[in-house]
Image (cartoon, rainbow, N blue to C red; front, top):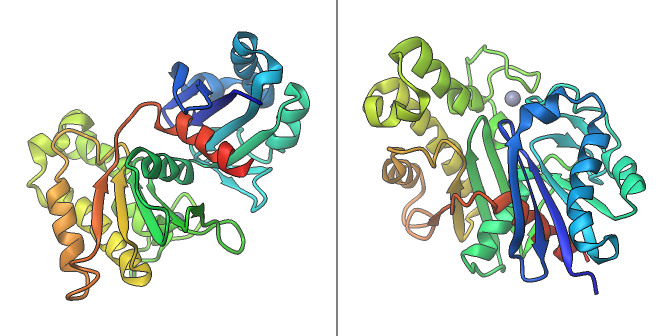
Length: 297
Ligand SMILES: [Zn+2]
């Protein structure tokens, strides 16, 4: 019986990792700046050294899997990282093969939003039948769905790219390589730009100081419209709402939910959809990674 999982979450800002036991409790947890990883040329070597620190604590034979939650584009089989817009050089890497060979332990990779959704379902004791969706507004607009307890990856592995649905007449280029994506109108990057260039405040204060200003309200409104589009198509039982932007102080969560409902059909799903604010737990991605590994075993 393997008793431990090693979970790693690599976000744009922080790289979190931990040693998770069979009850999904984080026995060890660590957070370092992602920039340390971004600077390293040998990405697989860096991750192997990180994992070995936990292996030294619990023993190689007791680790069921090393699971990574990544803000990256990857193949459907979840073996190769194609690109990571926020991490230079973390692209075109056969991560699963390379790392599992080095460690002698199974390695699993998955999109971070899918892992975070999995965690919130577990944390909130939500029933797994039917569809549960999650929207995570952070640097970008992330989205995921679970159908009958299983993460839906899509035909090619790229389902739920809600941030990249097109907006008519929007000519701006998106980091994904096409123009006019809704994410350009509703993401942390835009919030940062408004804070530094328009209002001259810290981005952390923007909702408290300038939440009533139209450009800030528009960010929330475009997010609501994207969420309403997904609910209209899927009629999910729950919509989990999280991500760094939604967890900022002063974020108008009530306004967001009300605007989503105003854009939904009457009586349902306007009345039936249930919103669940995400926990904001620092260990969410690391424990979610263990939950994901346990599901696969
Ligand atoms: Zn895009």
